[in-house]
Image (cartoon, rainbow, N blue to C red):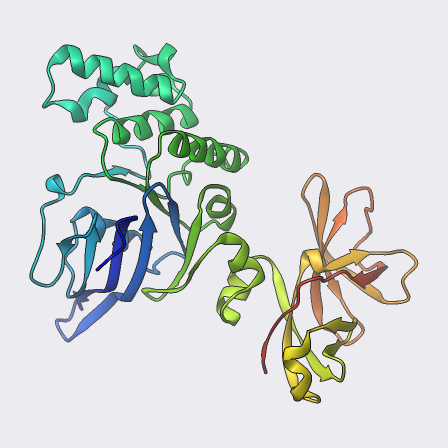
Length: 356
């Protein structure tokens, strides 16, 4: 029996497409599992082609399962033998391009999904949702008169107005300017949380995922590799793929020492007592840009290979004496030239390692 607090539950879902030559199948989703509680915001994070948008279409009812099942509020809506039509699933969708009707006003767009209500009630409810997304003053405007962020909020209000059990968002920020994305992700999170909406979005941008989601699933080749809190994905990745995908970092070679430490080229790091019996073992240590600190007084030197200005800081690519390349965030008032050597030291508090 499933928990009454779990709104969406996907169990061992598989979706296959026939190959163009007719010989065999291509597996788009393989044995996928996830659960989303009432009021939670989840995110499927992965590169293009990993199957994340296919999962959304399956939840909506636009894709059929060849194995597994999808449950909404403890009711099976998809399986190899059951397929509830999309119109009966109480699932709202916000598309990548917002899909607003250009010939309808903002108010008419929001009211579009409320056709089963009397005209006056439809208008009242649409105005209420426009107020919730702070667009009451744009009710009589047309989509082309709005900014990208305002169009996004109209699309969200239209999806939420029929009060579905679940909102799905397909790359909701991809058509917006990069500078707007993180701010709008925070705004969208506030809207969803303030209205107690359960939502699942897909994106390839981890900063968007972390800004909006309570839980994030890293996907690759049709599978969720790790479904977890954003903090745990970053600090407790389940395997090297997740560690490499989340955050900007590199793996360096290390040797376990006595006393629960690991020795790497930059110095020694504390591992803890769990590795006390593995003295001498070779392991891979993940170093992210925030594990390296700029220090003019440090005897450890690294050569600046590349740098990216990010406003408050630079992201430096540095080469160690061995030729190993690492990353470091350096405050932007330290503007070092390409080819210059700078002092660095380790500031890693949480060490992520994997067997060699």
